[in-house]
Image 1 (tube, rainbow, N blue to C red):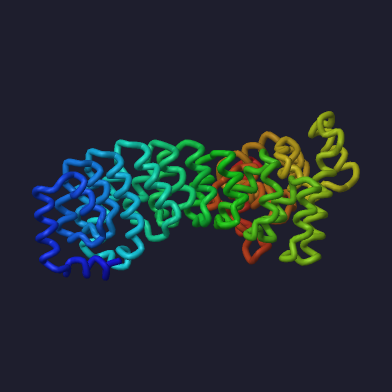
Image 2 (image 1 turned 180 degrees about the horizontal axis):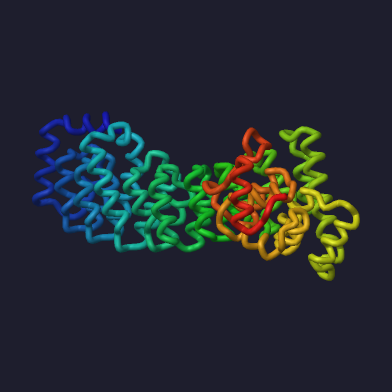
Length: 416
């Protein structure tokens, strides 16, 4: 296309002189004929871009020989049909112009497209959006403008499909608390980066969150998937989609398995990236936690349930985590009091202190493994990950005996 345009500038001067004569004294039909003719000299076409007849100006807008710098005139033309025709031609030119992004021709085209992206006529912005949504070389500035358009039919195609739209634009749009359809459009993009996935989920739009989970092109960090898993306790229709996510690691699968149905367990058991031992462990977790809930869960009080486990000699660390998976905090509190010998009121203060250290000391006194302390920090105390205390060397308590003693004595617990 560029070679063709350069060739046009070298046309015979005699042809240009003939065309100039028609421009001065020709009829509208003659001017229209010149405007439609690909052999017309570019300077003549630039002149005709200001013609009084909108049909002539429209013909100039679609003529392949019209110089790109005439776009500035045509983008502000008073006729919507002229502006619409210009939009189509500029989109057609983009593949050639984008190869010379530093050129003046590219700058002229982008400037004109930017004007059209703000056009007051909806059908022009809609047509431009439809044309650019699948255009990998669309100017980022222009698609950014279209993505922020107040009209859904303009912005949604760009938000949903346009790969030229930057993550920075998407994050800025999500930060402005857009409508649910806009969040869903971003969630359904062919590719969603981890940063954008986190922002989509952070918008707290339930349909968009489910769309994001279903989207195989969306990338999740481990931290985001953990947040999704925890929130999915309240949304069982998310479970099967989470179960097939490639980011689901063994430790996340074990956490997830604690509150899902047998159907989801079957999905997990078919994953070939988990070994047989892992799948068996997940199955055992599900069976144990279903048993904890029991058929008479609505009738049995936490005190009665605790007494049942004590009588059976089965008040184990696994039971504590089972109770946490069902958010049965009253049972957890009573069980920790039973195992530690600390009064339930004091146990409640330690769990609600907003710090990891009292929880770690409590679990040590209760004779529980450090992994239970980590789960309590997360599921009961709801501390942020940066406030967590983790096991030292994978299993050991991270606090010294003196530190644990100090924490317990602070809450009035004496060590014998």
